[in-house]
Length: 399
Image 1 (cartoon, rainbow, N blue to C red):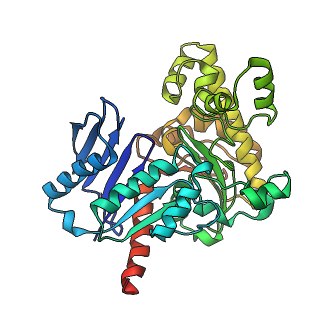
Image 2: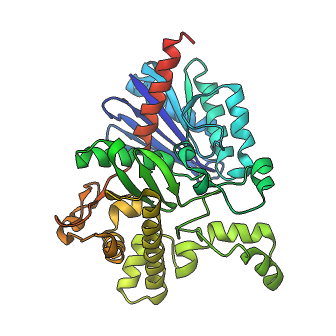
Image 3: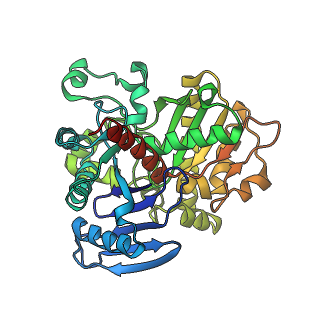
């Protein structure tokens, strides 16, 4: 009945216990700053949040807190499968898979493609296997949804040997979120997903836009790594490929320093010099802070330009979907983005847009407009559903 979902970051472990059929979630939590003196686990048990200090805590110790919470609810024995979010599966995985030693080695081989993410994902898998050795465990890949990209969308115009020998191609990310909101948007529009051409915009600290045709990803803004594409919280998005060489010569920076700055010191943070939080930037811009205003304007301009470009991959556009922390909560970003997309037929309903915050969601355009709507993403539920499906097949085969 219950599926445990695990999502590990470089110093964090997010978990949720869900019923894949109903979406019921009696337990969730987030362990943060693991390995530091400030490590802690914030647990939400049936809507009752509590924080547990865990100084110098590891992934395994965070799982210990999770076990104690499961025991307190009497649900440890009711877990039927465990699903793991894995950021990068290369081009080996187009669907969720049962975790085996061979799968673990492929995930490990993808570490150079996602050096910040895959090692953490592996740490979570190892901790879960040690804690729940008898349960089926499933890897759900952020890249898998984008394995349907046509070659004209995923190949770079670089020497072919870079692709054949080193896997240099566009992989795409946020696939779990894009897949979930596309399905949910179809339900809200009252139309079958296979008949729809959608653009989904996942906007948070990381941002990406995907063209979804008939439920399949046909183009996306992120590439070989999550650095490509839109302006993000601390990531630059697209820059001139000659930039690293130029900065190495002019500023004496190493490739490692430049890559780190593009990932952690750029985007909204780099433009504003203030913060990577869109809420704070909008407030600062409203007070007349010029760098904050510029950061928001560049974010919106690049977003609108990318959305318009994604329409080329579809040929016909039926709806635009906003999701993620910014997409779900910033009425201002949505309004100014749609204003720039009037040539595609979008007309904002200001009252509906104002209401579509803090978990409300729903349509935000006028009756005579091409539809745009807000859908709250739920990656944990999507992972739970896919995990339950794979685990059910495993049980059915008697494995």
